[in-house]
Length: 135
Image (cartoon, rainbow, N blue to C red; front, side, top):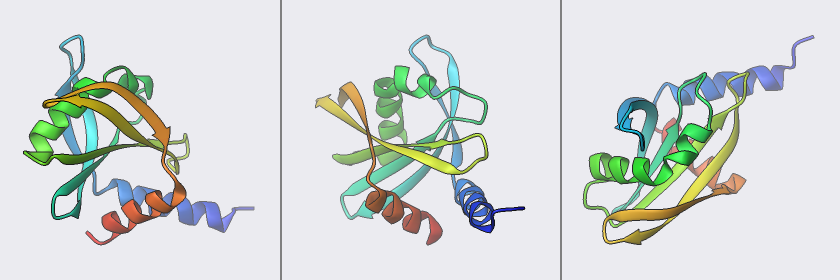
């Protein structure tokens, strides 16, 4: 028997992911890494980048390089925005959205340091999902 609720969630997740675009960044070893990014302007002066790693790539790739990735993504996609947020979207093996992590950094000038991930509250996840759905 197929759980219709799970099927609906899977289709919604796949539809949302189709709005992410591929971006190449360098990891701390100088290797090119593909990330999928969705840029959401959530206020006149605030940009939030939703980021996910490609299917088959372990999530630790992002965590080990979060500061370097944040620097490159902010520079490339958020420009001079001082209010910049980074949210990592993780998928489970069935391509359902199961974990969202906000990232906090200590910024020294334009350089992010000491990145820490925290689980994003469901209310914020729904708000970001609505930005994507409006595209």
